Length: 248
Image 1 (cartoon, one colour):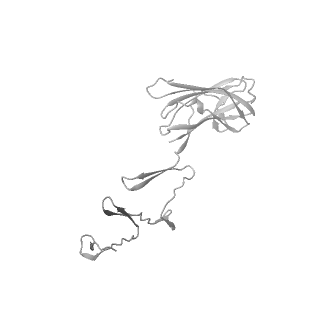
Image 2 (spheres, rainbow, N blue to C red):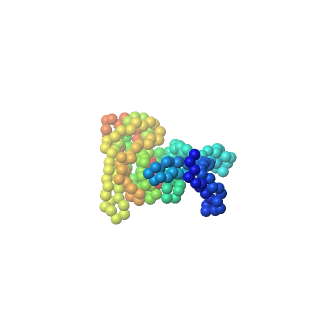
Image 3 (spheres, rainbow, N blue to C red):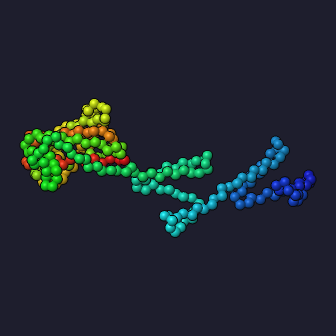
């Protein structure tokens, strides 16, 4: 080996440790050394890189016993859960957002009929009478609760005293304070629902409330077209009111 003179070595500007003709660079824990012969610069290029420490994370659930110790966590979306994971280089962290479904609220809305009916009940239930063989209209007014952001379900509740096909239709109007009372109108044309004697039936009228928003005053006309030959209930039907479910 050609001797070009010894190289003095010291660490962190301290005292000289040794003077030798050859340096041996050794990779320590979590260190990678790359040595390249740079003939252009007449030098040896030494790159010292720190590898990831790879420390383990201890995981437990609900402050209980340790579940495991691993260098990596795997987040799995369960039913009705959404995970959003983002690498936050600014704060040197990984941001994890765990979101559940929007809360659902069922609301039973009071009914207001504009005229009294002697038979305005079915058993112990207050109800409007939809007479057999006639075109009967019942009116209801209610307000969409302020905390409902989206209506997911709206049903009219009826109880029939016979079994068969009930023909009906529904008209609605919606408005907020300071608006024309029929700012929004909607309807469901002639429709049919199979009913069974003394069973509570839920008739979907969601399509008649597509423009309703929180705080709106809503007016509903629920019409039984009992004169239709296809109406085969052959008995009176009682309208109990509206059930609305939405997200809050």
